[in-house]
Length: 235
Image (cartoon, rainbow, N blue to C red; front, side):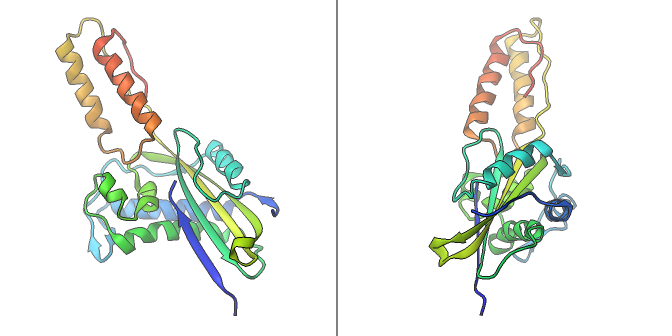
């Protein structure tokens, strides 16, 4: 009897990229869920959720695919330290040979989304308490302004820790839409600058995932907005 083990983790063998079928399976898995959330049609753990806002359609990004494939080629056992990206990992073990790697595109997306079915979520606003409920991979799929995804896959071969079963590693990298600016001139008073910055922060308040580095960068640039004569801030 063939034994299977599947494991998803939050953020030896031939090298292989996803084919078009694998890419489409990943895109469909993400965008179908995102569309339902945006329309208020998504049901998580038996509860129909409120509609989301500013939900963008994800598109495949070749640069993210390259970074994800590069990390997948290392047969990772944990998350990377690549800055300024989101990351999901998926592992699959099988006692039989594995030839069709494209099948793991839709399988990975389904495994990550299943966290919403297992645990649900209490609010459309992301908090650390929500993250600690076990929905880290699913929320990575659902960030409102995430519009780019690229994924890689590696057939890693026999895994001694699993009795020599073959292991497949899937890595997906994500980026949010980061083009937003505030015009501030030297004629603006400090109060006016603070109000513009407040508007800026409100614009980004619904973003669900920023790395520590991006958080520090946002704070630094916000302070520069208030106390400098910058004309434009690009995030």
